[in-house]
Image (tube, rainbow, N blue to C red; front, side, top):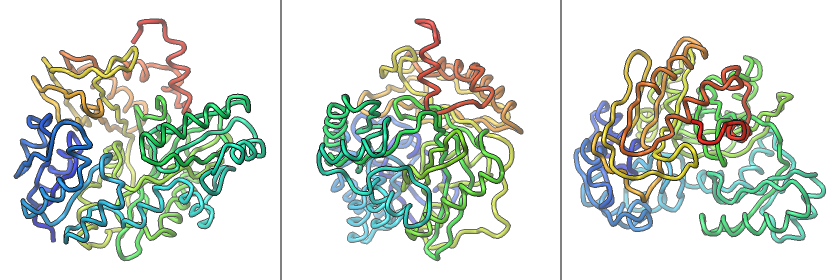
Length: 451
């Protein structure tokens, strides 16, 4: 059993891991940059250790600094959260060499499924549907053009080594292909150090549906339902919900079985997600796998009544998944990501929070590291809170989220709260008629300056 866990992350996810460890009776170590000295994850951890200056490359992404902090404090395991080092197979391997346990999937699985082209090959081998496209990363422009012609436009170019919308371009016509291919490759190189690109047929009106899966070291793999993640801007998710209003029980069972099938095929351990695109005719296709806990994991926790971070720790300690009787979903949950950014132009809005009053009441949860007079640093992701609600059904959950957003008061910086209010009032959203193009249409029909 683990005695002390170092959290190799910052912000709300670091605090989330601390909560789980405290309930399990495990001591915690918070690492932080000089910019995060006053963050709540440092306050609530049993120990805090500074690992470098504000820039991520010199602190949270500095393997030597993180591992040194673990050794100095006597930690016996590391939880990476999401982002930063969470999907770095090399980091997990180095930890093992240093005698430290990794709370996540095996390094070889991270490496395999983190490469989109190889993950696609695994999905094909496992009998999971995939879109037409390249089996291997594309070697040159000529090859890419020939494949795009065979697949048929529109197509989408994706960075083989990354995610989060970086290195991703939609190509509508052949005459724009060369420019978009070059742009995607350059962006992928800058973001991930790897300019490899692969190509897929682009679906015009898909939903983005992901299944939460979990595996242990004894070969048990389960799924804990789906999350609807179609509300996104530039491939960055804004709002998530569970269950998806688009899935029938039969379709849910079919997609869930496919997710488990693929996870078993790669010998998956710990938390992860299998992400699908769902077409208008209910055909679904494997998109990618995230080999970590997700930002939106609270949605599943609220619906399934589980603690996924505790499960991560327990499985990493060698415990078997408790699957007798299964997990039974109840009600509906929605999560809104509250970002410190201007809701009109999406520019980051770092600075000092003057007023911070989070909402409360039945079925309302706020995951945050922010507080009154906290100074939001300009060096990291702009998300400062996650607002999650749960209620008996989707309509009730929408009403509860609307109330919670109205009662969430943050002053001193601009936030995305007004944007979320508008999304929840949109007739198409209320009817569950969403796709990955929802935000494109929503923003196009808004009058200038409206929230």
